[in-house]
Image 1: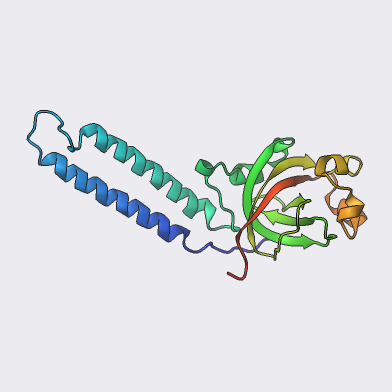
Image 2: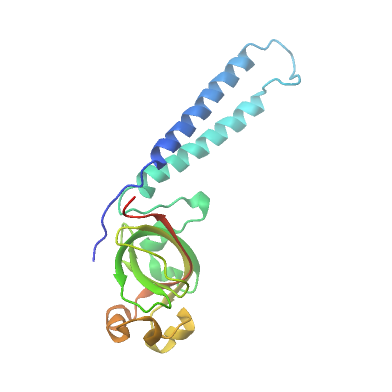
Length: 204
């Protein structure tokens, strides 16, 4: 199974404009400081410390822009921004190390699994590794292949005898073909989702 690559429009443009605005502000503040002949800072003046803090903030914005451009918006529709607590890049690089842990990952839906109306199941894929099953027992979201979603949940190894305990629902109640699903996924890593958010629908 493979995922299609699709950029999320608007993110790069907004990030670039934010960086430019901060650069312009920094240059303006530097000019103000250079024109000051006062021996010490007065009310309303910009100090060297102010400029250093601005420079540090600019460096942080540049780093976040780099994440969005290099790993977040391209290459498999994976959105990964460590500053937002997103585990996408690290998770798909080594899924088994996250067993038993809660993660937040963002990626494109690569396949929808036929289920009853009591929940949903689908595969999401990153830049590396195989697509990962997601099991959701809330109200079924309206999803399509290539939709970009953010999923927060706990990582489990799929085992038929512990499925109901781990995922909060009996497999026969969720899947139209539980035996077929276990045949494909047993022993692999899956996410028991507590929250599913559609970041971008395929039709957008």
